[in-house]
Length: 283
Image (tube, rainbow, N blue to C red; front, side, top):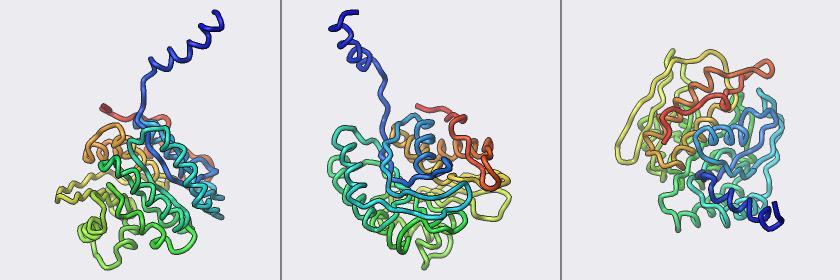
């Protein structure tokens, strides 16, 4: 092959390669590989999209406990995101741990700019207030930290304790969802994994009054990164063009199968098998 032909070959190959919708992800690292950005990457890829990971926090943790957190300066978070936004179309945004109020304000400002051009841009907010063991994942008051992001959320995915903490004056999922919608969210998915019943109820509430409940058997054991897995799977399907109902339905099914096939790396929380589980009926 001549030099000219060699130079042209990558262009020909790239032109014939299929594209993938991209999800801009704001989240923290996890050295155990079970949660945070590593969970996001796997779940979004399984959903048929591509993750653009922006690191917000460096954590010191294993599959059970968080020992320390090191939030990145807001200017570093901003620089990572702006480099991606300048050249890559963003089909959805997923927000996990932001680490500090400065980072939350930075991300909120970026979302405001993005929505000027893309007013229907899906934004999935997983309002992580602490680890499964209650270890802090944010510098400062966690509720105050995520407050600037609530109004930008197309979907917010709190578990039962998070919903109670976010809505201290509301009792029960219906009232909590109404309170979050009043604060700007279009959709609320209250996850039932922290309940005690034999079956888990995950309840979806939309601003237009639509509701639905998905139920599944409670699995034995504890899992590392299950919330990240679900929120990212939903974001991936929204990026691919699913309706909110279909994205939640597909995401819950994927998450259930990943947890059912979870594996262990050490005593304690198991790792969801995100890499070996496929979505069903993807567009």
